[in-house]
Figure (cartoon, one colour):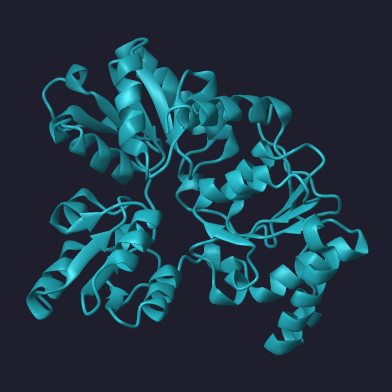
Length: 370
């Protein structure tokens, strides 16, 4: 039985071709008109990684959980057009009222990391872990995961985490059980556990493709943290070679990265933290300082423009923006708004009640502790 059901009032459609022939000015003017027409009935949250052409219309910007929480607080909006990716819109639907409609302008806007842990793999892997370790594991999932995974975690006594509160949530989890399953991002789990004093040799990676543990130690029973073999395709592309180049060519530069980067990159950086942490650190930095930033390119470019008194640039000059985030563009935003105007709601995201119930439990366990 499917745990997740996406409901569209019409079939999931491709954007009509005529939107591709509109000028940027025509589309921008039309979006502003529709925002003015809908007023408080329309709410547009925009993730930090969105393109400037979209973020200019956002009523609020933030990370995924911030945006979902703000959307939940906005009880006046009938339509929440979420400019982010699929799992973010799911979380918004979980937290908002039943009568509010959450819409994703382009259903192709997914997340490769979230897709690395599906519910079938997780239930199968959980059984193997229970057979190996018994009832000694509490599951934690990064909010960058599907509603089905959040639901699984909630039903099994676990909680969600963000990159801002991961340390606090791992500390809590260790008061519940002696082991933690952390999914779907192995790097955030590894970096956080290491900062808490868990040795690398006490961590194993669960490979959901082969259904096996990847572990170099002598005794699997020494494992304290089981890391799901998933990653962010953007942050994994920052490397030690990038850091070596910066240290050699611009030694005065501060290197700041997101904890979705590999352990090696985080260890050799000057600062590591959530998107919010990166934004605040650079905002509060002294004029004239230099910053190499290891996170998504749209955000780095925006920080560069916002802080002309500092030298802000990407740690990896060859990086591209997050491809799935960039599915949401000005044309798709306009299309979604015009379909609302016509009463033809498309790409509505709706999570089944049973999935939503346990997902809320996982979210609540986190929110009670932050």
